[in-house]
Image 1: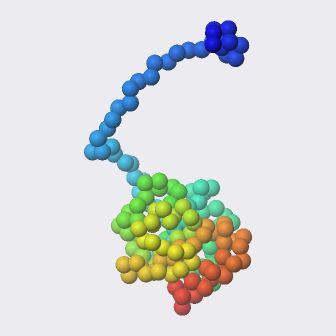
Image 2: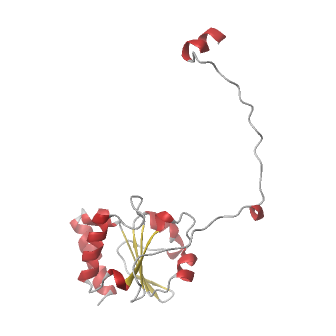
Image 3: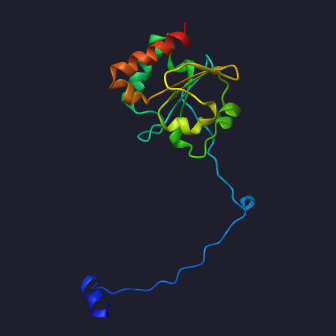
Length: 163
């Protein structure tokens, strides 16, 4: 291909940029910056709820309203829980949560969280116990709102978790 061919597609010209060679770093030289974990709620009953909400700094209004109904159904309020949006903490590890938040019950809403808690070998809509913590993993709040079958599955497990 010649100069005339390229000028037809790029009339403003083409510039050649010299690329730098990649630099390899030792793992010791890499510093991962972790944000301080924040949550909403007062965690009065030691219940941690983790969501993955890309739309909000905490939780979007529709999901918050639905979660409020879920909490009310098991006689809880937002003051009883600690709600963490994992989307805000890309380097989040379960041990970070354990070190920051005291909890005896853990509820995970969303497919994205199974990767984060992969070591726990959780099954969706199946209450589990891991290191003296009751754990329930389910679909996202959005998905549950839209699917009656998922609502029923969640409710059945919540009744076991909060008898």
